Length: 410
Ligand SMILES: [Fe+2]
Image 1: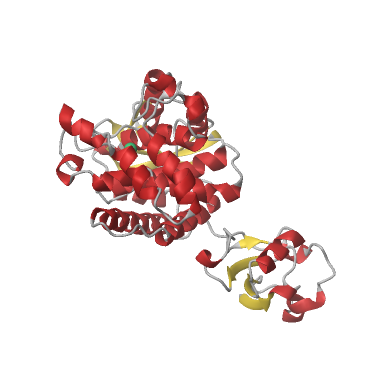
Image 2: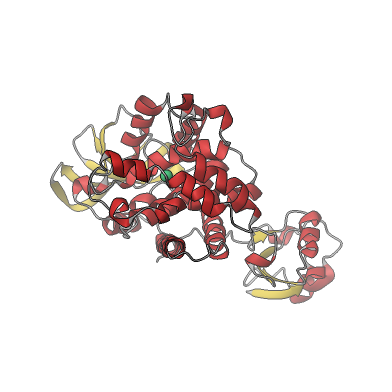
């Protein structure tokens, strides 16, 4: 049960589910949270919040409306709220709906720039904040989402996926949470300069010739000029740097300026890694997608000397070698989908799988649930991207749902 109360009645321990101002009117990132301190309540006041919606246990015999409305004011912590349910795990359907909406917003932004119209930041920022809220509720992290998109417009999907990965990586590497939206917005806009690259080059179904490639390499500078005109301070600052620097490389081997890592913003250094990871796992018209495990091996073996090793290490830690949604060839010949880890943060300990093929090309009549005490290279002979096994994103989502990975029932 939700109840609207005055900010004066809000107490430490209560669960806030809505504020009386929109995302864009305040500096408050989260509008759903449990109040941890009196300072948080003061921050709400400072942002002009007068009324908040709180969630009450429903039903809860220990709580009465009178208690909520004031009788507990003297307490610094409210024990009865400790047992309240946590926010539900986001469903795959919820994730995909948000992902698709973000792709649509990014698509409109690129279209606006292409038409010579002003770039609207507010809708992009809104998608970043909504994505972050879901991301922080989701202990499965985001690793398999990249393979779940049904949308095939690669530029906009790439920007959206990179935004999700960037905020996950920043959170993983200890960046303060209030900084995460800046990382997300910078990732969402890193390729905005491509809006001014001719479509016949952008959408060419094959490798670019040298002249086309030179044109394509103009997109960092074009992005810089688009974003540096923004009235938004974060866009003019961090986002402009990241748009300009994300194709630079360690040792000065990148473009457009040949900068070395120490001269490059840390957000750009992470974006370089994520840019490649997303492109390889999503695939391109002329190149089939790779599994996360193969992509991480590629980064470690082929790109380590060109990228920031710490950013690669954070990525490996975040997605894990075998993230949920991975398809693995086990030593007994069966191909199985990883459906969950007992500890989803570290990808260690017991792991649940669903065997789908008895051997490559031979589906089992019914998927068979399996549990392994752990998963590592001694148990996995090979990994596959779903497309290598003719499985669609919808198939993977269905199998994950079958394994109970989508407890909301969507
Ligand atoms: Fe780029």
